[in-house]
Image 1 (cartoon, helix red, strand yellow):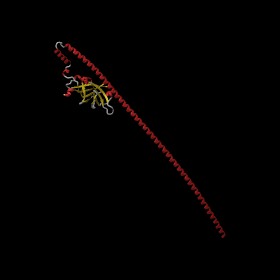
Image 2: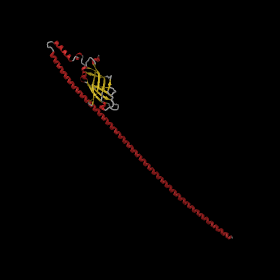
Image 3: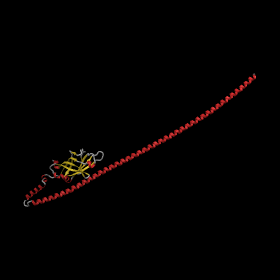
Image 4: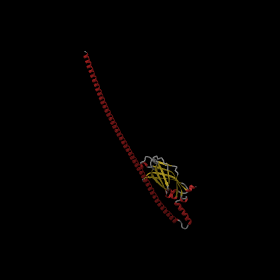
Length: 324
């Protein structure tokens, strides 16, 4: 029984040893497998992390490229817009400048044309007046000669006293005023009031309203009225004190020029009409002993046609009256 027990113990010991070895082998194998699994998992995890990092980097780079492209497109469009706006502004400025230049040229041309027509009309009027004065002078000369001839035929040849008396009588019958009063030779002409009426500014110029003033000139001396209110029928300037030097020659050949203008606050003033008054029409009333009031109505013309009238009122004061 001891032998059997010992054999059993040995067998049990062997089995225990074998079992421990098997457990140790199994544990070693499990540890190796666990290491292999862990290493493989770590490797796979690292690969996945690297792949994720690479994907993230590529996504970031793609996003950055797309953002850069979008920014470049936006800047390009903004630049194109700025360039287009600049070109539009330059083009608008050029068009505006061209329009202003054309407007100025048209206005200057119209003013120049009006001045030329006015000058031509004044020149023609002066020529007509000069021709008329020549005819009047020739008629007066012939009349004087005829009077002298008739007087010499009627005078008695044998009575010198009667001859002298008859000469005086004949002179008085021709023009008694020149015997009774001293002939006018120098003084002043004063314009005291002006009135315009029936000015066709709407029909001729297509204007809605008229802000009139008058420029009046004699012997290169000018006066300008204030701007008056035109009530669709007339405008009046009173209490004027426009004084011109007036001589016998002025009365004989002088012409009072009248220009009607429209005041314009935004553009150049526009000449509406013109007229003139030859002073010889007043000569029969003048002498050197008394003041002579006068009032004359003349036609206003525009573009060669009648477009209204102006009444000029004033007084001619001889030099003797001024001294007294």
